[in-house]
Length: 170
Image 1: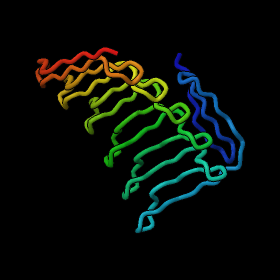
Image 2 (image 1 turned 90 degrees about the vertical axis):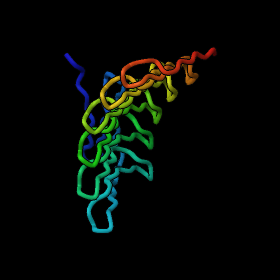
Image 3 (image 1 turned 120 degrees about the horizontal axis):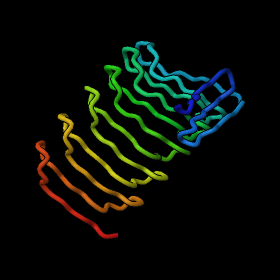
């Protein structure tokens, strides 16, 4: 059974509960919702604050009203899953933040939904594989990082042939 995730703001009760990410954040602080608007008065963003710190969801919209991004904040820091979208409403990325640092697997997509980039982070620095893809889903580039240092870099053509390969010592 998958762990249940809860990202919720109800009046002043904020809950970011995501066992997979080891997040269990709760508060009942006074939260003020603020809005930004395009020149034509359509909503551009909705953000929640506690004493000038982002605290709760921040949602940005395109000029036609489509959601462009949803980010959850806890006392001014991004925490949890961040989703970004193309103007077409198709997913652009799925990112994970812990205390404002990228953590774990980050995924970026072409507008047709195929993977564009997959990167792994630990404590805000690249750690592990980084894969970049061509639109035909074949690997364009394969890198390996350890604590932010590049260990390996391979570049491929669209047929999968290695064009260049480099290895680096720490």
